[in-house]
Length: 503
Image (cartoon, rainbow, N blue to C red; front, side):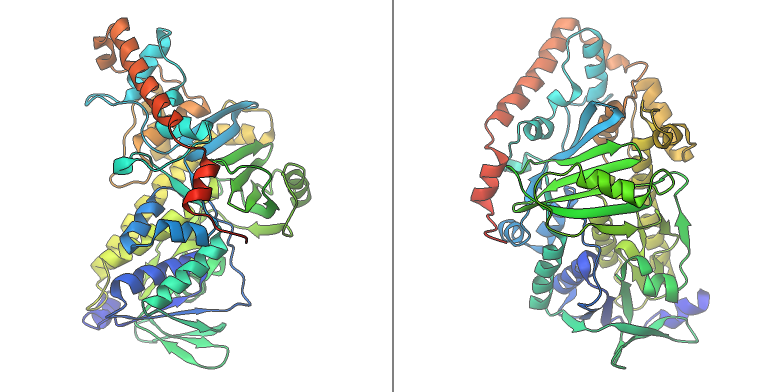
């Protein structure tokens, strides 16, 4: 490593080569071209003959901010990708059969500097003064009422449902406008420098060499550069995340689009339903240890609405992450670096975080090992906290009715997650590590929603008498209801704000 660092130091990075397109490749190209396109040559190599996974249709609010950084017009982007708005995820039968909850974006209630809103709500519920926890969150109530509208000062938190294939096409046009060059070809091999181990060029099936100083691997699960060429080790997390297969299918829309992703639990996994403007994305995520592909496929096709538009597509994966996502002069993004199932729509977010982190540490004057180490450390912290949040959905549940749910509920979990569970169970306390993705309110919503009831609340809540607490809670709930009721129906707002026209 020391020699590699010395070899790379002082060698300017002027040529960036992106291997693979799809969401990861074109997000990287768009951000690099928009910010560094005048000083860095950016080439992206992809083949029309190689398909992309392209089923990641649900996002989280960080994508809104990413687009603002790149000055991407929201209405144009949404129309081009047949997008709708998303206010959260509806988890159906996860806590127990027939019991549902919503993990929404935004804040719930009003915190005190000593304690979060959940403490006051817990006391209110104990006194018979409080409604459901979700009654105090605008985004959640609006999603239940199928309403949406932009509010002043970014007063409502939202994300998108989008067509991932159309999104890649949109970003391609955006990238090329700012100077990125697309090369249509298959990658036959990868050349490396025997002295440093760094990648020197991609060799195309035509024999052409595409040379570069920095290479970004967006080749999907095969991880041609980071995994196969640079030998980045893969850490398997299937001891905590049992699911290893997905089947995706598209159907015609059968009614107004709702601003929610639906996640419906099955005996051996779960099913998604994502409404776009002109169709619906559907799929199941399951564990091959607990069911077979034929059963999962039949269940999916028996639990969809509307005419089937595509042949069901099977995706097999191993949940986990490469221990290093930046090795030498190669950085992995998206599936090339790892994969966590899409239960909380984090895949595009992780691509985005990797891109932003690269821009913040871009090795203009040569690769420094300290930057590489910091990049890998921050990536590890990001993925670990997201991993724990996803495991939480399986560990904390009242379901024991099938071997899948029984085993998930009883499995040992990482110490970092167990600590969070113990803190919340004992005193409704949550915390946020550094810049981790999910805020305290997300942990509270999922823990309560999955059935974890704290044993006590913070004494700050006891400073309020019943009358004062009732007024406090009612004031928040009434304000949320009033604002939500003034929002237009979601479908109506989309048709007016960003109509996609005919597909």
